[in-house]
Image 1 (cartoon, protein in one colour):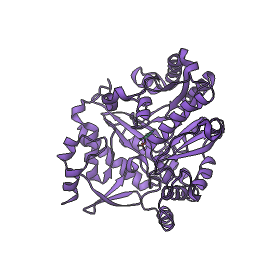
Image 2 (cartoon, protein in one colour; image 1 turned 90 degrees about the vertical axis):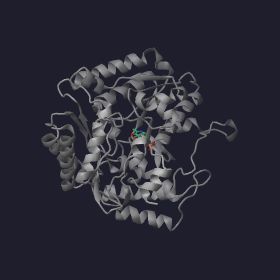
Image 3 (cartoon, protein in one colour; image 1 turned 90 degrees about the horizontal axis):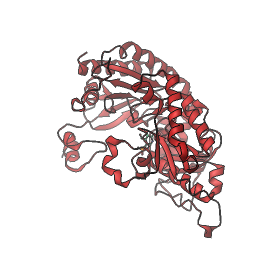
Image 4 (cartoon, protein in one colour; image 1 turned 45 degrees about the vertical axis):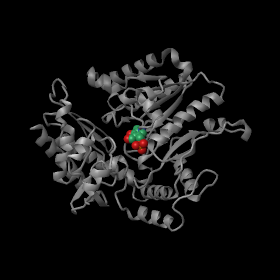
Length: 448
Ligand SMILES: Cc1ncc(COP(=O)(O)O)c(C=O)c1O
C-alpha cells in the first residue's frame, strides 16, 4: 500500500476534519535539509511554519544531528524518576542562565501542554503548602491558548476548539480582555488599548484578588488565537497587577521562546520576571519532544519537607528529560551562541517586515499584517473597510495555504490568518521567496 492508502486507512490527524482529509491527497514528507522539506516525489518546500513553530536552526543541522547521534551511542532513554543524567543537569544550568532572573529550578516534561499543566498544578499546590488554600482562581486572557490537556484547556478556553469538552473543565477561571480586542474591535490606538485592557484586567480580577492563585499569559504574542500581539507595557501591567494582589505570574513561552520574538524569551524583551515559566517547541531546536517549567526558589522551597509530610510534587511523565532531547537542546544552545542566531534572525525579520509592507499589506483583502520578530499573522477579510470576515465555508486561509505549495512553500493557517513562522535560520533569499509566494497565493485565492 502507498503512504496515502495506509494513512487514509489507519490514521487520525490532530486538528483535522478527517472527512476532508480522506478526500484529499496528503503531502508526505520524507526528509529535510536546512529550511526545506522534501516529499516522496522529491519536491522541495520551504518550511514556512517551522514544522509547527518548533524548528529553529533548520533540519539536519550538523551540530544537532551529531549531538543526537553521539547520545544514541551512549543511551537513548533513562528515567528522571529516581535517577539523573548529565544532559538533563547541564541543560538545566544553561537554561537557568538564559531565562529571566529569579527562575532557578527546571522541571522537565515533553510537550507545551504538559509544561503548562505542571505550572498550574505547582501554583495550586504552592498556595496550599503556604497555608493559603483559598487561592484557587486563575486569571487568563480571552482567546488564550495553552495546549490541549484538560488543565491547559481550562485556562486557554476557545469556544471553537473546546465547546465539546465544556463539562470536563476547571471553572474558577477569570478572563481578561487583551489589548488587541480594544484595538481591533473598538479601533483604539495602541496606548488607549493597553490602558483599556489593564482596566479590564483590574475589573475582572476585582474582588477575586485574594483568591487568585496565578495570572497566566502568553507573553507579547497570543499565537494560536491568530498571532495577536500586545505591547510590552501590557505584560508589565499584568506583572504589577499580580504583585499587587499577591498572585503568581505564569508566562507561557511555548510559542515565543527560543528567539521567535527576536529575543531569547519574550519576558526578557519586556523586562518581566515571572514566578513560573513554560517552554517547549523550540527548546530542542525542534528536533525532539521536550518541555520545561521553570520555578523560583521561593516556589521550589515550599515543596521541601520530610518524606512522610507528602508535600512532594507528585507529577511526572515517562519521557521527562529524555537524554536524546537534552542532547539536542544543548547542541541547539551552542548553535545560538556560535552562529549569532538572534542577531541574524533580527535582520531576517526586518527584511520580512519590509517585504510584507511592500507586497502583502497593500492587497485589498489583507486587513492587517501583525509581526513580532519572526512571528507573523496576515489577517484576511472579505471587506477591508468594515473588517467583515470571510464566511468559514469559503476556507480562504486553508485555500491560500494549499495554493502556496505550488510555489514551493508549506504554511498552515489559523482560520483566515495566514501564519508565517519560519526557522530562525531562514536566509534573506528564502525570506523573499516566502513572502513572494504568500503574496501570490493570497492574490490568487482572494481574486485580488
Ligand atoms: C502558547 C502555547 N502554549 C502551549 C502550547 C501547547 O504545546 P504542545 O502542542 O507542545 O502541547 C502551544 C502550542 O501551540 C502554544 O502556542
